[in-house]
Amino acid sequence: MKLWSGRFQKDVNEEVNDFNASIDVDYRMYEEDIEGSIAHVNMIAKCGIIKEEEGQKIVCGLNDILTKIKNGELSFSKENEDVHMNIETMLIDNIGEVAKKLHTARSRNDQVALDIRIYLKKEILNLKKLILDMEKVLLRKGEENLNTIMPGYTHMQKAQPITFSHHLMAYSEMFKRDYERLEDCYRRMNAMPLGSGALATTTYPINRVMVKEVLRFDKVMTNSIDGVSDRDFVLELASSLSILMMHLSRFSEEVILWCSQEFNYVELDDAYSTGSSIMPQKKNPDVAELVRGKTGRVYGNLMGLLTIMKGLPLAYNKDMQEDKEQIFDSVDTVKICLSVFAKMIDTMKVNKENMEKACRDGFINATDLADYMVKKGMSFRDAHHVTGEIVFYAIKEEKVLEEISLEKFKEFSQIFEIDVYEAIDIRKCVENRKVIGGPSPEEVKVRLKELKEFIIVKANERRELCG
Ligand code: ARG
Image (tube, rainbow, N blue to C red; front, side, top):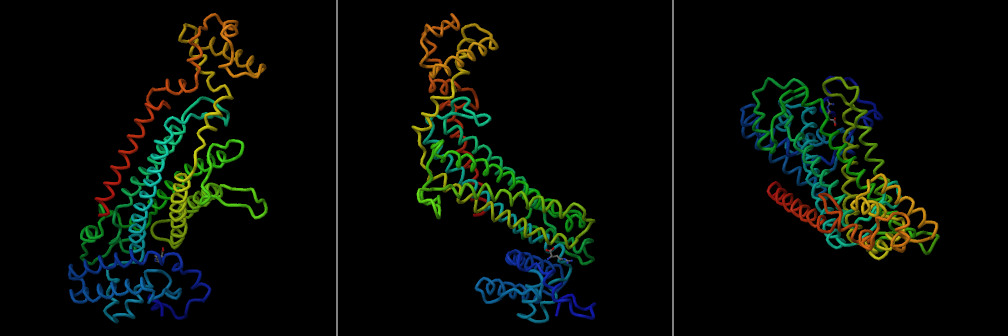
C-alpha cells in the first residue's frame, strides 16, 4: 500500500508506477535521507511535537535501517517510489506504528531539497580533493620541467618559446579557479531548507535552527517557497563542472596531439593507453579522448537541468525529480575523469629533447629579433617589417635565424651587431621573459611556490572541515 493511498480508490497503473519511481536514481542518497530524518525526529521530539521515547525509537529504527542497507539486508523497491518513501516504509516494517510519526511537520518536498544538498556538499568535498590531487601532479611535473623549452602556439602555429612547466602552470591556474568555483558553489548550497514543508512551512512549533546546527549548515533558508522550489545550487554545480570539463578537455586535446608521431612531445605510460584490435603497432591515448568525449555529457547535463527548470511555476513540481540523474552523472563523470587524467599525466614521459628540437623551426625567436632592433633604437613597426623580410629570406634559403651571417643581417639593417645571436638564442628568449606571469624559469619558480602554498592551505582547510 502506498503511503499516500488514502485518497485513492484504485491502485496506480503499473507502468505509471514505474514511470513515477525515482528509486533507481535517488537510492544513493539513503545515508543523507536517514541523517536528515534523524535530525528532524530529534528536533520534533525536543520541541514536544512527539514524545521523547517515540523519538528515540524512531532514531534507533533509522540507525538499524542504515546498517541493514549497508549490509545488503534491505533492498529498495519501485513500489515505494523514491528513497524517502522506501526508508519510511522500511521503518514502519521495522518498528511498527510509531514510525508513522516521523513525517510529522515535514514534506517530501523539503526532505528531498535537504537530502540533495547534504549529498552534493559531500561530493563537492570529494571533487575538491581530486582537484588538489591533480594540482599535486602538475606541481611535480612543473618542477621537473622548469627548463624544458618548447614552442608555444597560437592558431596551432609555432609562436614563441616557452617552457613545458609554464604550459602546465597555465592549467594549474585554471584548476585553481575550478576549485574556487566549487567553494563558491558550496557556500551557497550550505543553506538548510527543511522546515519549508510542502511550500508554506508548518503550524507545528518546529526549531529549524536546531536542525541546521545538527546537520552543519551555515544558515536556514528564509523563504519556504524558495526552499522547496529552486535548484540553482544544482545548476551552479553543473555549470562549474562543465567549466572544469572544458579545461580537462582542452588539456586532453593537447595530450592527444603531443603523443602523435607528428609531435612526439610525450609518451603515455602503457597502463594509461590502449591498443588497437587490428593494428598491432598502435598505442592510443584513449583516456584523454574519453575525457574529451565525456565533456559532452557533462555539458548535456547542464543543458538538461537548465531546461527542466526554465518553465516551472513555484513551488515544487515533479519535473524536478529529473534533476538527480543528471547532476549525479556529472559528479560521477568529473570524479572519474579527474582521477584517471591526473594519473595519466603523472606517469607520462616527457620527451624533453623533442620539445627542444621543435623550437628550431618555426622562427619562434622572430619577435625577439624585432625586439633586438627596437632596443637599438628602431620603432617596433619598422623592426617588425625588417624581421619579416629576414624570415622570408631564411625560408627561401632553408635556414634558421641563428644561421644567418652577420654580414647578411647587416644587409637588412646596419643596426645589427654580433650580440644579435645572444638575443635570438631560444633559451635566452625564454629566460628574458621574466615579467610577472612570464615563462622564465625564475618567474615560473615563483608560480610553483604559490601553487605549493595553495595545495598546503587547501589541504589544511580540508583537514579542519573533514577531521
Ligand atoms: N522523488 C521526489 C523528487 O525527487 C521527491 C519529492 C516528491 N514530492 C512530491 N510531492 N511528489 O523530487
